Image (cartoon, rainbow, N blue to C red; front, side):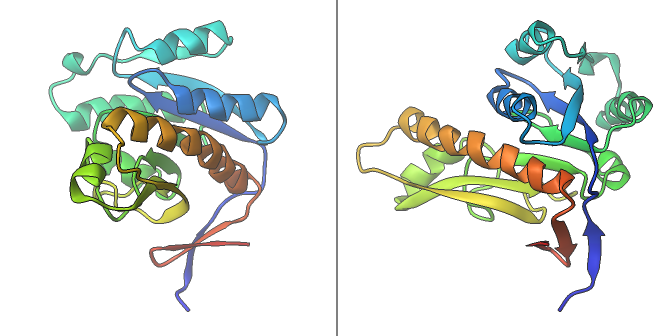
Length: 211
């Protein structure tokens, strides 16, 4: 059996959520926190898009919301250096990417190894990247779904934490399949965060085990 390389902490933690759009997965995580399911707090909601609806939702819920303009930084590494500074000053334990439409640089991945989660609307390692619901339809797969995984330097290739399976129907469009997958995303993402802060996640090699 592979050596344990990471064990999640069993404690009340602080979360930073990065988003670029509506932030529906952010809302699902925050709802679970407010319901007492997750032993953590959202200390920061950050976006690369000034008009992201998720930022407005964060403000409505009394959470700190921050926009950092990518155009103010000459490189992606410079931008992620600024992100890292904002995260570190708030003593963040876990970063949750929730529809964050920027590739995270190795700089941030190395600073938060096994402490950045992402939700992807496909059953990884199948269909990484963008527009994956349409790709699933085009390839004629019978099942797709959603994957919560740790973020690694290779895009969409970090250790898989949880997955949910969704059937692909013969008359599905990208929109109908996306909606059905999104329902499952809202279930498994909060569950993965809950397991993290209950100290139940172990990473051995590239596999995740539950304590």
